[in-house]
Amino acid sequence: MNKISITKNRTVTILLIISSILFSAKVMMSQSTKQWYKGQTHAHSNKSDGDSFPRQVVRWYFEHEYNFLVLTDHYTVTDITYLNPYKDQNFILIPGEEVTDTFEKKALHVNAINLKSTIAAKHGSNVVETLQNDIDSLIAAGAITQLNHPNWLWSITVDDIIKLKNVKLMEIYNVNRDSNNFSAGGSPGMEEVWDRVLSAGICIYGVATDDTHDYEGEFRIEKAYPGKGWVMVRATELTIEAICDALNKGDFYASTGIVLNDISTTSKEYKLEIKQLGDEKYTTQFIGKNGEILKTEFGLTPVYMFKNTEMYVRARVTSTNGVIAITQPFFLKEKQIE
Ligand SMILES: [Zn+2]
Ligand SMILES: [Zn+2]
Image 1 (cartoon, helix red, strand yellow):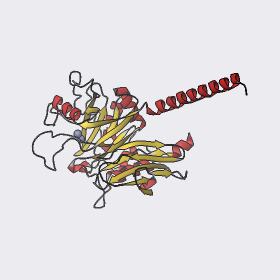
Image 2: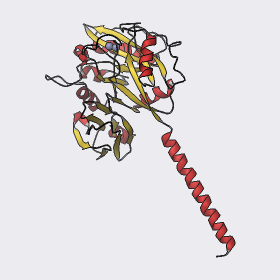
Image 3: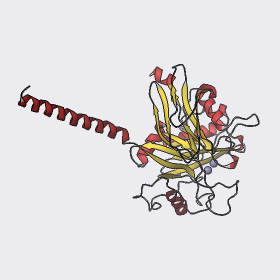
């Protein structure tokens, strides 16, 4: 091989290396364009029955490293126009309302996320009709719907939820004392309710929320303090549009204390990457139709390989410190139909 061809070969090799570096940089960039943003989709101020001014509520969530807050006062969209002095510090506000309806003493509350102006409760002649009337008016206004605390006062049953249309999110862990989140006494907890709804072929995404009312005073178990349940949303940027887009697509998880570095689903597997916090240990359960535990794994990188007989698969991570994370259902059957 002469000198010129060696130089040519070297040049080609160098060009190949450079282009491969550029290609992998591009791939890495496309994978890393999304980030996790911590958010709260249910909080009250003294514009309804919270104990603090909206500005104080906003400050609490900003100071505790949240990236977004949906203020959801009862009966009213609290004006957020001049409420956020932290706009340039990785924190946004999304307008919202807790549409507060009732039927025969049942609490029928639906959060409207990204609602521009107040919508009154529409009422109805039974639980399902009341909720659907409210949901329809929120959908028409372009908001994301979140069914709140179904088990509070045992207000909304599985059968009711299955009949509803256009519920996008549902509170699985509204962390208040009276939300009846867990199964006991023969009544289904919210994860059991969720699995029954999913098993009926209805895809609703699960959230954890504070439903904060109390920012001040004595710490007592019956009070609704902030900072106990939230969502981590994976979005391209911190804007109302990007966060709402990710919520609509289910690109988020709900947590009461666990941090996930990554969630990935392909046609072959459902995989999590858990961030190690302190010395706590983790158990991950992959859950399928009717709440069946498909697999249990320990460690920081649990994986479930699909058998392709599952209707859907979701994951639940618990830690030795009693906190949890729930990820969204991945529907295989729906995928097969597509
Ligand atoms: Zn409520
Ligand atoms: Zn509330």
